[in-house]
Length: 153
Image 1 (cartoon, rainbow, N blue to C red):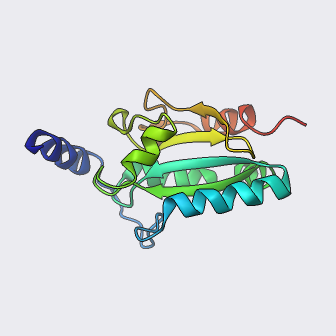
Image 2 (cartoon, rainbow, N blue to C red; image 1 turned 180 degrees about the vertical axis):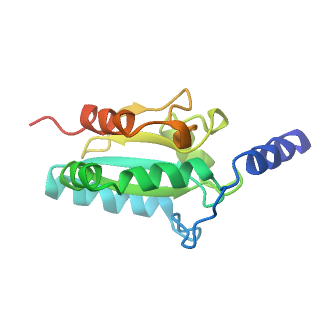
């Protein structure tokens, strides 16, 4: 247990935002399981997929992913094809069971993303910390990811 707390502290220090955002991007009080159920209902109605973004407000790479997701072209692609649910993992002590349920290994780093179809079937889970270095990734990588997992027409 002490080792796990030490790891969480090391990760928190190593990934602390260089310029902390003035606004949190994750609702730390959200009921993530309820948010997922609501997103699935919306996805069925709108014929979209659901993106689960596991992360935390202290995580610089989570903020980097969020900024990329709000770039106009990518934001438009996401709005047309996805319902997004941001899931706070705190200091790797919150929503861990949900991450496990969707095959997202948080120990590989955050942000971590899972994509569900509108019925809740897991289409993809990032298992290798693919976005854990989001600060150093280029826009094309994010765009390619969201293009790949959008619903089939």
